[in-house]
Length: 260
Image (cartoon, rainbow, N blue to C red; front, side, top):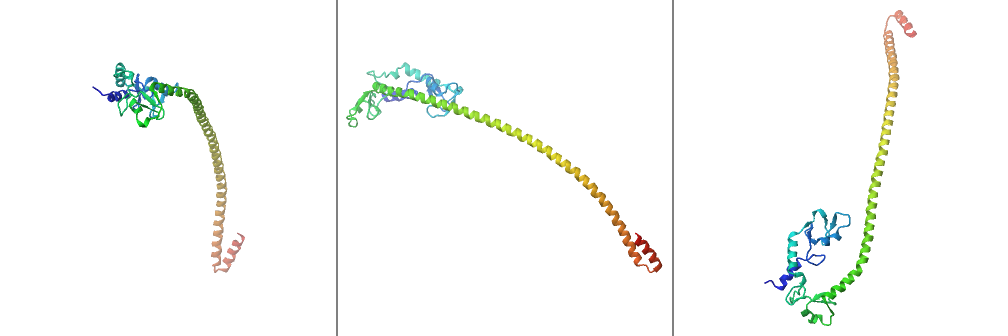
């Protein structure tokens, strides 16, 4: 027959980490952790399809959250055996047991802020401490947590409003940036077109001027070529005349050359 500690350990594995109760419709997340369906609802913002694992904070998609059938079956069997109601000999106990004495943890030590069994209560290290029944301690902490619930909810609402505003600001920034980028691209495209037309016009004007100047310069060159040829011929005849020995012939040629 299973010992008290073994039953306690088995039952603890069937507890939802958020509600600390036997799993109801447990869902397994992509990270491997399982939670009751109801416990997952607050983890997914309204209107969203993604949430964060309450234990490891890894994101998960709702469409990938599957029912943990094996865990669901075990939790249902434990519920039928009333393990969550402390159905131990003597009744009225809890399925939590003292690891040292294997006695039900029925008391809560206010000084140590932890559950203890009746044997622990009588030990020297707990002498003079105040004890409450577990149910009373639970009620006390529930009241304290309940009192903090509204401020937490209001704080969360403020944070979510700020989150929404920030998301809107980011979306607006993205939209404005894209619009400005499009405007800049359009303006520079116009400038490029104008510069291209201006470049083409300047090149065409330069080409026309080049052709005009070239024609004038070639005409001048032809004129110079003719003069050079004429002067070369004259110079040659002068040299030939200077070499003549015939005085009469020389004088005739000299007169003709002088007239040219």
